Length: 223
Figure 1 (tube, one colour):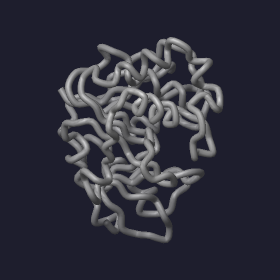
Figure 2: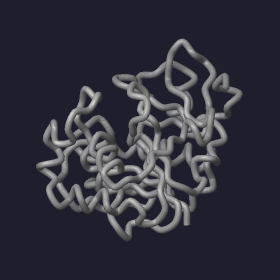
Figure 3: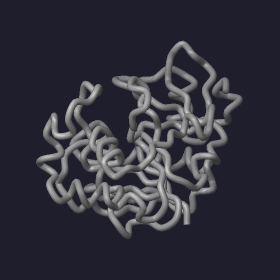
């Protein structure tokens, strides 16, 4: 069983539309995923999306730590940010084996925009965080880091290193799979990643056209 997993926490700019568009893009360009799951505290009913409840009230991006709950999935699982745009054949994303995205700004460090693992292999991330969430959500809890913002990916990076887990990055394993939104660029790789304030709903075409349709023909989007 191969699962694409995303997390929607209420109170921000994201809503059910983002889940639906991510799922539509995945179904078109990454059909190897058997399940598309959304962890959320909202009442959703998206087509082809299995909705599971968040158990904790962890705010904002900290809700993503629930993605590693034991027993949630089996087989290959990929945590994917809601602002990802599928733009082409992304079959490699569903390949087995642990990997994360490498941080765009800080080479050699984890980004939680994409995290891939097997079964309960990363359950220790959830368990350690859930044992003392207030501690880990506090800036400085992971020591000196280059990241300007303390968030879930800082903690994930810290926990992986503390557990002696070698980091493996999708950019190294699957060159060309991830591409970063950067106008006026008009051609993109299979997965468009948005950094900082840039988001698909305010992007220029073809990225915005792909996000709006969820299943736009690549040729029409200039890809």
